[in-house]
Image (cartoon, rainbow, N blue to C red; front, top):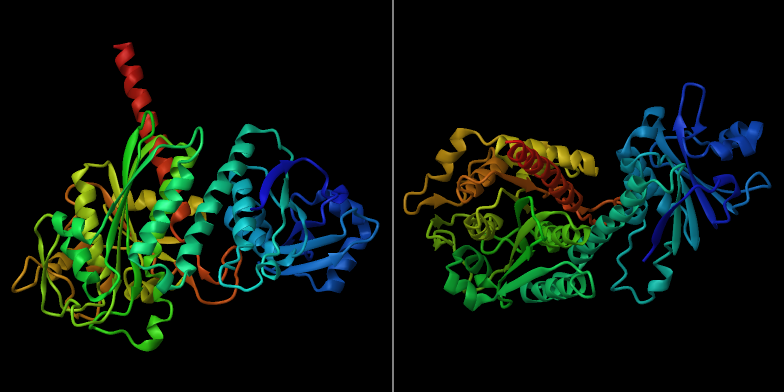
Length: 519
Protein backbone atom coordinates (compact mmCIF):
# COMPACT_ATOMS: atom_id res chain seq x y z
CA UNK A 1 0.00 0.00 0.00
CA UNK A 2 1.34 3.41 -0.96
CA UNK A 3 2.28 5.64 1.98
CA UNK A 4 1.80 9.41 1.92
CA UNK A 5 3.77 11.95 3.94
CA UNK A 6 4.21 15.72 3.94
CA UNK A 7 7.44 17.54 3.13
CA UNK A 8 8.65 21.08 2.53
CA UNK A 9 11.27 19.96 0.01
CA UNK A 10 11.62 22.00 -3.16
CA UNK A 11 10.00 20.29 -6.15
CA UNK A 12 12.87 21.54 -8.32
CA UNK A 13 15.39 19.76 -6.07
CA UNK A 14 13.35 16.64 -5.30
CA UNK A 15 15.13 13.28 -5.42
CA UNK A 16 11.88 11.46 -6.23
CA UNK A 17 11.61 9.45 -9.43
CA UNK A 18 8.88 11.82 -10.63
CA UNK A 19 7.48 15.20 -9.59
CA UNK A 20 3.87 16.13 -10.35
CA UNK A 21 3.03 19.79 -10.93
CA UNK A 22 -0.27 21.39 -11.86
CA UNK A 23 -0.96 23.60 -14.86
CA UNK A 24 -3.70 26.23 -15.04
CA UNK A 25 -5.14 28.21 -17.94
CA UNK A 26 -4.79 31.98 -18.04
CA UNK A 27 -5.43 34.69 -20.61
CA UNK A 28 -1.67 34.82 -21.14
CA UNK A 29 -1.42 31.11 -21.72
CA UNK A 30 -0.81 28.13 -19.41
CA UNK A 31 1.32 28.49 -16.28
CA UNK A 32 2.37 26.17 -13.50
CA UNK A 33 -0.01 26.15 -10.55
CA UNK A 34 0.57 26.97 -6.92
CA UNK A 35 3.01 24.56 -5.33
CA UNK A 36 5.31 24.55 -8.36
CA UNK A 37 6.85 28.02 -7.96
CA UNK A 38 10.36 26.55 -7.60
CA UNK A 39 9.99 24.66 -10.87
CA UNK A 40 8.80 27.79 -12.62
CA UNK A 41 11.84 29.66 -11.29
CA UNK A 42 14.22 26.84 -12.23
CA UNK A 43 13.09 26.80 -15.86
CA UNK A 44 12.86 30.56 -16.12
CA UNK A 45 12.36 31.80 -19.67
CA UNK A 46 12.58 28.26 -21.02
CA UNK A 47 9.27 27.27 -19.44
CA UNK A 48 6.79 29.02 -21.74
CA UNK A 49 8.39 27.71 -24.97
CA UNK A 50 8.47 24.23 -23.44
CA UNK A 51 4.76 24.32 -22.60
CA UNK A 52 3.98 25.62 -26.07
CA UNK A 53 6.05 22.93 -27.78
CA UNK A 54 4.31 20.21 -25.78
CA UNK A 55 0.87 21.60 -26.58
CA UNK A 56 0.06 22.08 -22.91
CA UNK A 57 -3.24 23.88 -22.34
CA UNK A 58 -3.99 23.32 -18.64
CA UNK A 59 -7.34 21.69 -19.45
CA UNK A 60 -8.68 19.47 -16.63
CA UNK A 61 -7.19 15.98 -16.70
CA UNK A 62 -4.60 16.74 -19.39
CA UNK A 63 -1.27 15.08 -18.61
CA UNK A 64 2.23 15.32 -20.10
CA UNK A 65 5.30 13.39 -18.93
CA UNK A 66 8.46 15.37 -19.59
CA UNK A 67 12.04 14.08 -19.23
CA UNK A 68 13.88 16.85 -17.43
CA UNK A 69 17.08 18.77 -18.08
CA UNK A 70 19.51 20.23 -15.60
CA UNK A 71 16.81 22.69 -14.48
CA UNK A 72 15.40 20.21 -11.97
CA UNK A 73 16.86 17.13 -10.31
CA UNK A 74 13.99 14.66 -10.78
CA UNK A 75 14.20 12.45 -13.90
CA UNK A 76 10.54 13.03 -14.82
CA UNK A 77 8.23 16.00 -14.57
CA UNK A 78 4.52 15.19 -14.80
CA UNK A 79 2.32 18.11 -15.88
CA UNK A 80 -1.38 17.78 -15.06
CA UNK A 81 -4.13 20.21 -16.01
CA UNK A 82 -6.28 21.78 -13.32
CA UNK A 83 -8.43 24.08 -15.46
CA UNK A 84 -8.85 27.80 -14.85
CA UNK A 85 -6.77 29.61 -12.23
CA UNK A 86 -9.62 29.37 -9.73
CA UNK A 87 -9.03 25.61 -9.66
CA UNK A 88 -5.91 26.17 -7.54
CA UNK A 89 -8.14 26.61 -4.49
CA UNK A 90 -10.84 24.12 -5.52
CA UNK A 91 -10.42 20.73 -3.77
CA UNK A 92 -12.62 19.00 -6.36
CA UNK A 93 -10.39 20.17 -9.22
CA UNK A 94 -7.23 19.26 -7.31
CA UNK A 95 -8.64 15.80 -6.49
CA UNK A 96 -9.34 15.13 -10.17
CA UNK A 97 -5.90 16.34 -11.20
CA UNK A 98 -4.12 14.21 -8.59
CA UNK A 99 -6.06 11.18 -9.81
CA UNK A 100 -5.09 11.76 -13.43
CA UNK A 101 -1.46 12.26 -12.39
CA UNK A 102 -1.41 8.92 -10.58
CA UNK A 103 -2.00 7.13 -13.88
CA UNK A 104 0.53 9.24 -15.76
CA UNK A 105 3.46 8.72 -13.39
CA UNK A 106 3.72 4.94 -13.79
CA UNK A 107 6.69 2.78 -12.75
CA UNK A 108 8.02 5.46 -10.43
CA UNK A 109 8.85 4.03 -7.03
CA UNK A 110 8.80 7.46 -5.40
CA UNK A 111 6.68 10.44 -6.40
CA UNK A 112 6.50 14.02 -5.15
CA UNK A 113 3.20 15.88 -5.57
CA UNK A 114 3.74 19.61 -5.99
CA UNK A 115 0.06 20.44 -6.27
CA UNK A 116 -1.84 23.11 -4.29
CA UNK A 117 -1.72 21.84 -0.68
CA UNK A 118 -2.00 24.82 1.65
CA UNK A 119 -5.19 23.85 3.50
CA UNK A 120 -6.51 20.63 5.05
CA UNK A 121 -9.14 20.37 2.31
CA UNK A 122 -6.49 20.62 -0.41
CA UNK A 123 -4.18 18.12 1.27
CA UNK A 124 -7.12 15.74 1.58
CA UNK A 125 -7.91 16.20 -2.10
CA UNK A 126 -4.31 15.56 -3.18
CA UNK A 127 -3.94 12.38 -1.11
CA UNK A 128 -7.37 10.91 -1.85
CA UNK A 129 -7.22 11.84 -5.51
CA UNK A 130 -3.78 10.33 -6.08
CA UNK A 131 -4.51 7.18 -4.05
CA UNK A 132 -7.79 6.49 -5.82
CA UNK A 133 -6.67 7.55 -9.29
CA UNK A 134 -4.01 4.85 -9.09
CA UNK A 135 -6.43 2.16 -7.94
CA UNK A 136 -6.22 -1.17 -9.76
CA UNK A 137 -8.33 -4.31 -9.31
CA UNK A 138 -5.92 -7.14 -10.04
CA UNK A 139 -7.39 -10.07 -8.14
CA UNK A 140 -8.25 -11.98 -11.29
CA UNK A 141 -5.14 -11.06 -13.29
CA UNK A 142 -2.54 -13.75 -13.91
CA UNK A 143 0.41 -11.41 -13.39
CA UNK A 144 -0.50 -8.65 -10.97
CA UNK A 145 2.99 -7.17 -11.15
CA UNK A 146 2.38 -5.82 -14.63
CA UNK A 147 -0.92 -4.29 -13.55
CA UNK A 148 0.07 -2.49 -10.35
CA UNK A 149 2.37 0.41 -11.19
CA UNK A 150 1.68 2.54 -8.13
CA UNK A 151 4.49 4.27 -6.26
CA UNK A 152 5.64 2.88 -2.94
CA UNK A 153 6.20 6.28 -1.38
CA UNK A 154 4.50 9.58 -2.20
CA UNK A 155 5.48 12.91 -0.72
CA UNK A 156 2.99 15.78 -0.70
CA UNK A 157 4.95 19.01 -0.93
CA UNK A 158 3.58 21.86 1.17
CA UNK A 159 4.82 24.95 2.99
CA UNK A 160 3.36 23.65 6.25
CA UNK A 161 4.45 20.01 6.68
CA UNK A 162 4.55 20.32 10.47
CA UNK A 163 1.14 21.94 10.81
CA UNK A 164 -1.00 19.62 12.88
CA UNK A 165 -4.11 20.22 10.78
CA UNK A 166 -2.31 19.32 7.54
CA UNK A 167 -0.72 16.22 9.06
CA UNK A 168 -4.12 15.10 10.35
CA UNK A 169 -5.68 15.70 6.95
CA UNK A 170 -2.99 13.57 5.30
CA UNK A 171 -3.50 10.70 7.74
CA UNK A 172 -7.30 10.84 7.63
CA UNK A 173 -7.35 10.98 3.84
CA UNK A 174 -5.43 7.73 3.69
CA UNK A 175 -8.02 6.07 5.95
CA UNK A 176 -10.87 7.22 3.71
CA UNK A 177 -9.01 6.26 0.54
CA UNK A 178 -8.43 2.74 1.88
CA UNK A 179 -12.13 2.45 2.70
CA UNK A 180 -13.10 3.59 -0.80
CA UNK A 181 -10.62 1.17 -2.38
CA UNK A 182 -11.96 -1.71 -0.28
CA UNK A 183 -15.49 -0.82 -1.37
CA UNK A 184 -14.35 -0.83 -4.98
CA UNK A 185 -12.79 -4.26 -4.48
CA UNK A 186 -16.09 -5.71 -3.24
CA UNK A 187 -18.11 -4.07 -6.01
CA UNK A 188 -15.68 -5.33 -8.66
CA UNK A 189 -15.73 -8.91 -7.39
CA UNK A 190 -17.63 -11.32 -9.68
CA UNK A 191 -21.05 -12.15 -8.18
CA UNK A 192 -20.36 -15.89 -8.07
CA UNK A 193 -17.59 -15.11 -5.59
CA UNK A 194 -19.63 -12.65 -3.53
CA UNK A 195 -22.97 -14.33 -2.86
CA UNK A 196 -24.75 -13.20 0.31
CA UNK A 197 -23.02 -15.79 2.53
CA UNK A 198 -19.62 -14.98 1.00
CA UNK A 199 -20.25 -11.24 1.26
CA UNK A 200 -21.12 -11.67 4.93
CA UNK A 201 -17.90 -13.67 5.39
CA UNK A 202 -15.96 -10.85 3.71
CA UNK A 203 -17.47 -8.32 6.11
CA UNK A 204 -16.56 -10.56 9.07
CA UNK A 205 -12.98 -10.75 7.79
CA UNK A 206 -12.81 -6.97 7.35
CA UNK A 207 -14.20 -6.52 10.86
CA UNK A 208 -11.58 -8.87 12.30
CA UNK A 209 -8.80 -6.97 10.56
CA UNK A 210 -10.16 -3.62 11.76
CA UNK A 211 -10.46 -4.69 15.40
CA UNK A 212 -7.18 -6.59 15.72
CA UNK A 213 -4.28 -5.24 17.74
CA UNK A 214 -3.70 -2.88 20.61
CA UNK A 215 -5.63 0.36 20.32
CA UNK A 216 -8.02 -0.99 17.69
CA UNK A 217 -11.60 0.31 17.88
CA UNK A 218 -14.31 -1.80 19.45
CA UNK A 219 -16.88 -2.84 16.86
CA UNK A 220 -19.50 -5.51 17.44
CA UNK A 221 -20.79 -7.65 14.58
CA UNK A 222 -23.80 -9.94 14.18
CA UNK A 223 -24.63 -12.03 11.11
CA UNK A 224 -28.24 -13.21 10.78
CA UNK A 225 -28.60 -16.24 8.52
CA UNK A 226 -31.83 -17.32 6.81
CA UNK A 227 -33.12 -19.10 9.92
CA UNK A 228 -32.51 -16.05 12.09
CA UNK A 229 -34.13 -13.82 9.48
CA UNK A 230 -37.24 -15.98 9.51
CA UNK A 231 -37.38 -15.80 13.29
CA UNK A 232 -37.03 -12.01 13.16
CA UNK A 233 -39.74 -11.72 10.53
CA UNK A 234 -37.59 -10.07 7.85
CA UNK A 235 -39.93 -10.98 5.01
CA UNK A 236 -38.44 -8.48 2.59
CA UNK A 237 -34.91 -9.90 2.71
CA UNK A 238 -36.22 -13.46 2.63
CA UNK A 239 -38.65 -12.72 -0.19
CA UNK A 240 -35.98 -11.19 -2.42
CA UNK A 241 -33.57 -14.05 -1.76
CA UNK A 242 -36.16 -16.80 -2.17
CA UNK A 243 -35.22 -17.61 -5.75
CA UNK A 244 -31.50 -18.09 -5.14
CA UNK A 245 -29.57 -21.16 -4.01
CA UNK A 246 -27.40 -18.76 -1.98
CA UNK A 247 -29.47 -17.79 1.08
CA UNK A 248 -29.73 -14.17 2.27
CA UNK A 249 -27.97 -12.55 5.19
CA UNK A 250 -28.29 -9.48 7.38
CA UNK A 251 -25.05 -8.14 8.82
CA UNK A 252 -25.23 -5.63 11.67
CA UNK A 253 -22.26 -3.64 12.96
CA UNK A 254 -22.10 -1.42 16.03
CA UNK A 255 -19.29 1.00 16.79
CA UNK A 256 -19.51 2.40 20.32
CA UNK A 257 -16.89 5.08 21.12
CA UNK A 258 -16.14 5.94 24.72
CA UNK A 259 -18.11 9.19 24.84
CA UNK A 260 -20.41 9.44 21.82
CA UNK A 261 -22.03 12.78 21.13
CA UNK A 262 -24.47 11.40 18.55
CA UNK A 263 -25.94 8.16 17.23
CA UNK A 264 -26.00 7.57 13.47
CA UNK A 265 -27.67 4.57 11.84
CA UNK A 266 -26.50 3.52 8.37
CA UNK A 267 -28.37 1.12 6.10
CA UNK A 268 -26.98 -0.18 2.80
CA UNK A 269 -28.60 -2.23 0.04
CA UNK A 270 -26.68 -5.44 -0.58
CA UNK A 271 -28.13 -7.20 -3.64
CA UNK A 272 -25.11 -9.26 -4.68
CA UNK A 273 -26.59 -9.88 -8.13
CA UNK A 274 -29.86 -8.65 -9.57
CA UNK A 275 -31.34 -10.61 -12.45
CA UNK A 276 -34.64 -8.83 -11.89
CA UNK A 277 -36.21 -12.03 -10.60
CA UNK A 278 -39.32 -13.17 -12.47
CA UNK A 279 -39.65 -9.59 -13.77
CA UNK A 280 -36.49 -10.43 -15.67
CA UNK A 281 -34.08 -7.72 -16.79
CA UNK A 282 -32.92 -7.58 -20.43
CA UNK A 283 -29.60 -9.35 -20.84
CA UNK A 284 -27.67 -6.16 -21.47
CA UNK A 285 -28.95 -4.65 -18.25
CA UNK A 286 -27.48 -7.46 -16.15
CA UNK A 287 -23.83 -6.92 -17.05
CA UNK A 288 -23.14 -4.47 -14.19
CA UNK A 289 -25.59 -5.94 -11.67
CA UNK A 290 -22.76 -7.28 -9.53
CA UNK A 291 -22.61 -3.65 -8.38
CA UNK A 292 -26.10 -3.74 -6.84
CA UNK A 293 -24.50 -4.32 -3.44
CA UNK A 294 -22.53 -1.05 -3.56
CA UNK A 295 -24.69 0.55 -0.87
CA UNK A 296 -23.98 -2.20 1.65
CA UNK A 297 -20.28 -2.14 0.80
CA UNK A 298 -20.18 1.63 1.31
CA UNK A 299 -21.99 1.48 4.65
CA UNK A 300 -19.71 -1.25 6.02
CA UNK A 301 -16.48 0.41 4.92
CA UNK A 302 -17.63 3.83 6.09
CA UNK A 303 -18.39 2.35 9.51
CA UNK A 304 -14.91 0.82 9.75
CA UNK A 305 -13.33 4.11 8.62
CA UNK A 306 -15.32 6.15 11.15
CA UNK A 307 -14.18 3.77 13.87
CA UNK A 308 -10.54 3.93 12.74
CA UNK A 309 -10.70 7.72 12.76
CA UNK A 310 -12.07 7.58 16.30
CA UNK A 311 -14.99 9.91 15.63
CA UNK A 312 -17.19 10.30 18.73
CA UNK A 313 -20.32 9.08 16.98
CA UNK A 314 -22.05 5.80 17.74
CA UNK A 315 -22.68 3.91 14.51
CA UNK A 316 -25.32 1.22 14.00
CA UNK A 317 -24.88 -0.22 10.51
CA UNK A 318 -27.20 -2.63 8.71
CA UNK A 319 -26.27 -4.49 5.52
CA UNK A 320 -29.16 -6.64 4.19
CA UNK A 321 -27.80 -9.06 1.57
CA UNK A 322 -29.72 -11.12 -0.98
CA UNK A 323 -29.37 -12.43 -4.53
CA UNK A 324 -32.37 -11.70 -6.76
CA UNK A 325 -32.61 -14.76 -9.01
CA UNK A 326 -35.13 -16.75 -11.06
CA UNK A 327 -36.39 -20.16 -9.94
CA UNK A 328 -39.56 -21.99 -8.97
CA UNK A 329 -39.20 -20.65 -5.44
CA UNK A 330 -38.78 -17.02 -6.46
CA UNK A 331 -41.21 -14.39 -5.23
CA UNK A 332 -43.97 -13.76 -7.77
CA UNK A 333 -45.75 -10.58 -8.84
CA UNK A 334 -48.96 -10.59 -6.84
CA UNK A 335 -47.39 -12.09 -3.73
CA UNK A 336 -47.72 -10.26 -0.42
CA UNK A 337 -44.72 -10.12 1.89
CA UNK A 338 -44.85 -9.34 5.60
CA UNK A 339 -41.86 -7.21 6.50
CA UNK A 340 -40.07 -6.71 9.81
CA UNK A 341 -42.51 -5.07 12.19
CA UNK A 342 -45.60 -6.51 10.46
CA UNK A 343 -46.20 -4.18 7.50
CA UNK A 344 -47.49 -6.06 4.44
CA UNK A 345 -46.42 -5.22 0.90
CA UNK A 346 -47.97 -6.30 -2.40
CA UNK A 347 -45.36 -7.22 -5.00
CA UNK A 348 -45.94 -6.14 -8.58
CA UNK A 349 -42.39 -5.94 -9.95
CA UNK A 350 -39.70 -8.27 -8.64
CA UNK A 351 -37.07 -6.04 -10.21
CA UNK A 352 -37.87 -3.36 -7.63
CA UNK A 353 -36.36 -5.53 -4.91
CA UNK A 354 -33.93 -3.18 -3.22
CA UNK A 355 -36.61 -1.27 -1.34
CA UNK A 356 -37.80 -4.53 0.23
CA UNK A 357 -34.49 -5.46 1.85
CA UNK A 358 -33.95 -1.85 2.90
CA UNK A 359 -37.39 -1.73 4.52
CA UNK A 360 -36.55 -4.59 6.88
CA UNK A 361 -33.23 -3.02 7.80
CA UNK A 362 -34.67 0.49 8.21
CA UNK A 363 -37.38 -0.82 10.51
CA UNK A 364 -34.72 -2.43 12.70
CA UNK A 365 -32.56 0.69 12.61
CA UNK A 366 -35.25 3.08 13.81
CA UNK A 367 -36.04 0.79 16.75
CA UNK A 368 -32.69 1.90 18.19
CA UNK A 369 -33.87 5.54 18.18
CA UNK A 370 -30.79 7.01 16.51
CA UNK A 371 -30.39 10.74 16.03
CA UNK A 372 -30.28 10.24 12.25
CA UNK A 373 -30.63 7.33 9.83
CA UNK A 374 -29.10 7.35 6.35
CA UNK A 375 -29.67 4.66 3.76
CA UNK A 376 -27.49 4.16 0.69
CA UNK A 377 -28.64 2.18 -2.32
CA UNK A 378 -28.26 1.61 -6.03
CA UNK A 379 -32.02 1.89 -6.03
CA UNK A 380 -33.55 3.17 -9.25
CA UNK A 381 -32.77 3.66 -12.91
CA UNK A 382 -35.15 6.61 -12.73
CA UNK A 383 -32.60 8.52 -10.66
CA UNK A 384 -29.96 7.91 -13.32
CA UNK A 385 -32.35 9.24 -15.95
CA UNK A 386 -32.97 12.32 -13.82
CA UNK A 387 -29.42 13.12 -12.70
CA UNK A 388 -27.03 11.18 -14.93
CA UNK A 389 -24.34 8.74 -13.90
CA UNK A 390 -22.15 11.09 -11.84
CA UNK A 391 -24.71 12.59 -9.44
CA UNK A 392 -26.54 10.87 -6.57
CA UNK A 393 -30.06 11.87 -5.54
CA UNK A 394 -30.83 12.62 -1.89
CA UNK A 395 -34.31 12.77 -0.39
CA UNK A 396 -35.86 12.61 3.05
CA UNK A 397 -36.12 14.98 6.00
CA UNK A 398 -35.35 18.45 4.67
CA UNK A 399 -32.64 19.44 7.17
CA UNK A 400 -30.97 16.04 6.98
CA UNK A 401 -30.93 16.16 3.18
CA UNK A 402 -29.30 19.59 3.27
CA UNK A 403 -26.62 18.36 5.68
CA UNK A 404 -25.91 15.28 3.56
CA UNK A 405 -25.55 17.35 0.40
CA UNK A 406 -23.20 19.74 2.23
CA UNK A 407 -21.16 16.77 3.50
CA UNK A 408 -20.97 15.39 -0.03
CA UNK A 409 -19.70 18.70 -1.36
CA UNK A 410 -16.99 18.85 1.28
CA UNK A 411 -16.03 15.25 0.46
CA UNK A 412 -15.80 15.86 -3.28
CA UNK A 413 -18.93 13.93 -4.28
CA UNK A 414 -21.81 15.27 -6.36
CA UNK A 415 -25.25 14.88 -4.76
CA UNK A 416 -28.49 16.69 -5.44
CA UNK A 417 -31.63 17.11 -3.29
CA UNK A 418 -34.80 15.52 -4.66
CA UNK A 419 -38.40 16.07 -3.48
CA UNK A 420 -40.87 13.67 -1.90
CA UNK A 421 -44.24 15.08 -3.05
CA UNK A 422 -47.33 14.32 -0.98
CA UNK A 423 -48.94 12.44 -3.86
CA UNK A 424 -46.23 9.81 -3.65
CA UNK A 425 -47.60 8.72 -0.29
CA UNK A 426 -50.95 8.07 -1.96
CA UNK A 427 -49.29 5.95 -4.65
CA UNK A 428 -47.32 3.93 -2.11
CA UNK A 429 -50.53 3.22 -0.16
CA UNK A 430 -52.59 2.31 -3.22
CA UNK A 431 -52.57 -1.50 -2.83
CA UNK A 432 -55.99 -3.15 -2.74
CA UNK A 433 -54.79 -6.15 -0.72
CA UNK A 434 -51.85 -5.03 1.45
CA UNK A 435 -50.69 -2.11 3.54
CA UNK A 436 -48.35 -0.84 0.85
CA UNK A 437 -47.73 -1.17 -2.87
CA UNK A 438 -44.13 -2.01 -3.73
CA UNK A 439 -44.44 -0.58 -7.26
CA UNK A 440 -47.26 0.87 -9.35
CA UNK A 441 -46.01 0.87 -12.99
CA UNK A 442 -46.62 4.60 -13.35
CA UNK A 443 -43.93 5.77 -15.71
CA UNK A 444 -43.14 9.03 -14.00
CA UNK A 445 -41.32 9.63 -10.71
CA UNK A 446 -40.01 6.12 -10.10
CA UNK A 447 -37.12 7.34 -7.98
CA UNK A 448 -39.43 9.48 -5.86
CA UNK A 449 -41.87 6.58 -5.41
CA UNK A 450 -39.01 4.42 -4.11
CA UNK A 451 -38.01 7.13 -1.65
CA UNK A 452 -41.58 7.55 -0.47
CA UNK A 453 -41.82 3.78 0.04
CA UNK A 454 -38.72 3.81 2.26
CA UNK A 455 -40.08 6.75 4.23
CA UNK A 456 -42.87 4.47 5.48
CA UNK A 457 -40.25 2.62 7.57
CA UNK A 458 -38.39 5.55 9.10
CA UNK A 459 -40.94 6.69 11.69
CA UNK A 460 -40.15 10.07 13.21
CA UNK A 461 -36.37 9.71 12.96
CA UNK A 462 -34.58 12.30 10.80
CA UNK A 463 -33.67 10.40 7.65
CA UNK A 464 -32.11 10.71 4.22
CA UNK A 465 -32.02 8.26 1.34
CA UNK A 466 -28.97 8.37 -0.98
CA UNK A 467 -29.70 6.85 -4.39
CA UNK A 468 -26.25 6.10 -5.85
CA UNK A 469 -27.47 4.06 -8.84
CA UNK A 470 -25.54 6.23 -11.29
CA UNK A 471 -22.25 7.05 -9.54
CA UNK A 472 -21.64 3.65 -7.92
CA UNK A 473 -20.19 2.07 -11.08
CA UNK A 474 -18.08 3.76 -13.75
CA UNK A 475 -18.45 2.00 -17.08
CA UNK A 476 -16.18 4.28 -19.10
CA UNK A 477 -12.46 4.91 -19.04
CA UNK A 478 -10.61 6.51 -16.13
CA UNK A 479 -11.54 10.09 -15.34
CA UNK A 480 -9.82 12.06 -12.60
CA UNK A 481 -9.79 9.95 -9.44
CA UNK A 482 -12.42 7.57 -10.88
CA UNK A 483 -11.29 4.32 -12.43
CA UNK A 484 -13.32 1.78 -14.39
CA UNK A 485 -15.71 -0.34 -12.31
CA UNK A 486 -16.81 0.25 -8.75
CA UNK A 487 -16.22 3.78 -7.51
CA UNK A 488 -16.76 3.56 -3.75
CA UNK A 489 -19.49 6.19 -4.03
CA UNK A 490 -20.94 7.55 -0.76
CA UNK A 491 -18.08 6.38 1.50
CA UNK A 492 -16.44 9.85 1.70
CA UNK A 493 -19.84 11.48 2.19
CA UNK A 494 -20.82 9.16 5.05
CA UNK A 495 -17.53 9.83 6.82
CA UNK A 496 -17.90 13.58 6.27
CA UNK A 497 -21.46 13.46 7.59
CA UNK A 498 -20.29 11.65 10.73
CA UNK A 499 -17.70 14.40 11.19
CA UNK A 500 -20.49 16.96 10.84
CA UNK A 501 -22.54 15.20 13.50
CA UNK A 502 -19.55 15.00 15.81
CA UNK A 503 -18.83 18.71 15.40
CA UNK A 504 -22.37 20.02 15.72
CA UNK A 505 -23.60 17.67 18.45
CA UNK A 506 -20.32 18.01 20.32
CA UNK A 507 -20.59 21.80 20.26
CA UNK A 508 -24.19 21.61 21.46
CA UNK A 509 -23.20 19.32 24.33
CA UNK A 510 -20.36 21.65 25.31
CA UNK A 511 -22.67 24.66 25.30
CA UNK A 512 -25.19 22.81 27.45
CA UNK A 513 -22.51 21.78 29.92
CA UNK A 514 -21.19 25.35 30.09
CA UNK A 515 -24.70 26.68 30.72
CA UNK A 516 -25.30 24.13 33.48
CA UNK A 517 -22.00 25.02 35.14
CA UNK A 518 -22.77 28.72 34.96
CA UNK A 519 -26.20 28.15 36.51
